[in-house]
Image 1 (tube, rainbow, N blue to C red):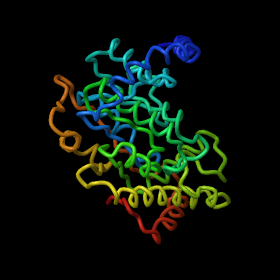
Image 2 (image 1 turned 180 degrees about the vertical axis):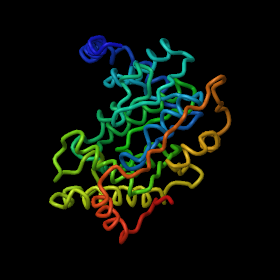
Image 3 (image 1 turned 180 degrees about the horizontal axis):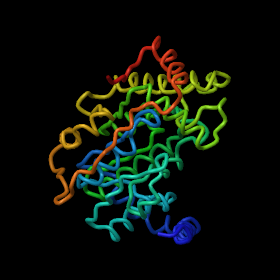
Image 4 (image 1 turned 90 degrees about the vertical axis):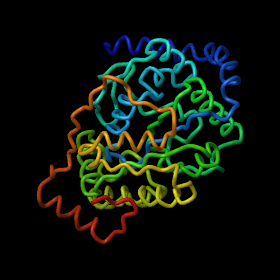
Length: 319
């Protein structure tokens, strides 16, 4: 769909939000009270760890609900956006397997998107969040909205927004039955990918790019190589510490490398995590998934990254 049409739809949904809000309130009140039958599943991990392709594979091949680009356009009214998406794409799979730094706009309105509507309640200038950072009103509205999305869809709801990697303390209190897919990748290639993304996007080399760890200000002034390694390390450790307070049966560790080697096995593990009632979409072939764990920096720069990685303890490290 041409950008102009997306802009037009976005403008209608944005400026019509006050009217839409009044229309969707009864639905949120109706669907946002009862504990959902199916889980809400959050995909988390450090940036550039393979979370987007994992999200795409899962939501394309399994019959589950997720946040698509259309719902994101209605980010002020995600419940209305879900209803609209359900009407336009009642059973259709998205078959989206490309992205640009997590963005899937090239693949259409039904392609899975990184949910942006959560910034209605969560801080935008930092990612680490505790319960005390949100008001009781924000917490209740957040809970009701997620419950309404879950109950309206009638399926497991998958949400990928990596900022929740640093907001697990809030999630376990507000959504105690939520489940988590933790995407892991060899930290060498995660750090390399972040460094390359910073350069591609002309990001300042003295500022943390992407997901901001709890004390991200302390990373400013480090060399770019040390900064990205410490960024990944701190995010992993925060996830690891916060997951200690969540039941093991609600957590699935998904290795990026395994997604390319055995995607059908990964899908089976995801279905087990979701519980009974989740089914594989019929007639949907497995995509060819290219796991890009290869050196793309100079030999000297790769050695610098390795030297920063080696002395650190890695909470979620894969082989």
